[in-house]
Image (cartoon, rainbow, N blue to C red; front, top):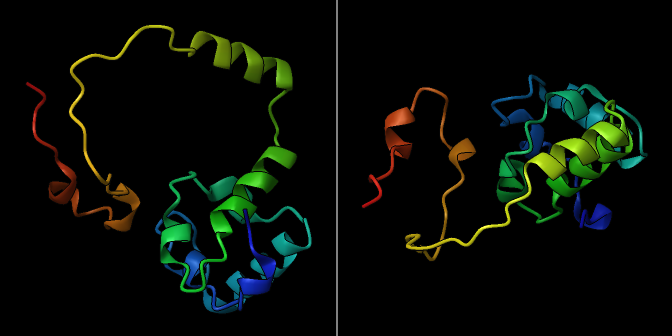
Length: 123
């Protein structure tokens, strides 16, 4: 859940995002507009990687705001969404999956640091 009262408009979430191109002034305008429920370029550019929530120094959860607005301002019909979800519904059983205590978000690494996110092959 986005915590409006915790957002101090520092804009670390948008300025440091590698998918959104915004300077500090633009980011403040966009975040203010999003807090007020308006559509901004962020809604179209965000790839929903969740890194903004991890970057936010005040734990305001900007990703939750962005994702909510993406859903509100969706440009795909609900029928198409339902059909796609139905095709992707998993009904099997997962077996022999390696477990980890924490999963690292790849969006915290720069686009050129691919060697940092290569995992070990599954057995």
